[in-house]
Image (cartoon, rainbow, N blue to C red; front, side, top):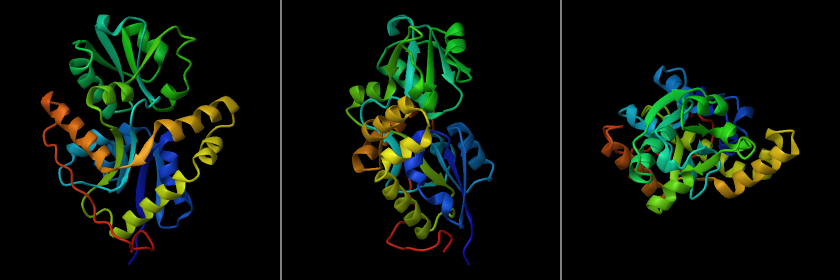
Length: 272
């Protein structure tokens, strides 16, 4: 018997290519939230699969990851950054966007390993001026980071995707589809992989539909085409495992293993 699969995706432009057409399926319920809320809803059992911050996967033993799909970057990501009015070496406090767990963990790793500073970290809602009123630097993610004009605010933007790749030579995986071991059949996986393939063929259309403002449409098209990768390739997996090891070294996570849902060429309804 088929069943409806409840999906939770991040409410940012970066996920739209991965959910292309899913809103038209009758066997899917799709909702959009900030990354940390996706993880919370998964914890609460209110969704079956979530496009969750990659580090959130490690906090749910026994969960599995949908193979072949991610929100990643290989160099500058444009939508995850530290903003500061001081040289990074002089930063003593960082306001962390409460919308994400992975980006907050990456910030701690990069401060320790890349920037070699030990600032105080404070959680804060994603409002850059108020964040910088209370801290030397601010982590901002997603659409707020992508579309803000940091130059108009007189602040430096330090792209964390670029900083990670400069440090490791590897891509960074920001989010994955994940859920409990029985949440996704091979048919579910096939549908999600097909949605991702379809979306990657329509990046400009997706960016144009996401905003009515020409300037934002141009930024969105460039972002989807040039900054993001959606394939959880072997090289991306190397980047993900490296991130997990770095997070473990700082005591941010326990286990670092990754398990996947079964995948094959099955077609059909998601709940089949």
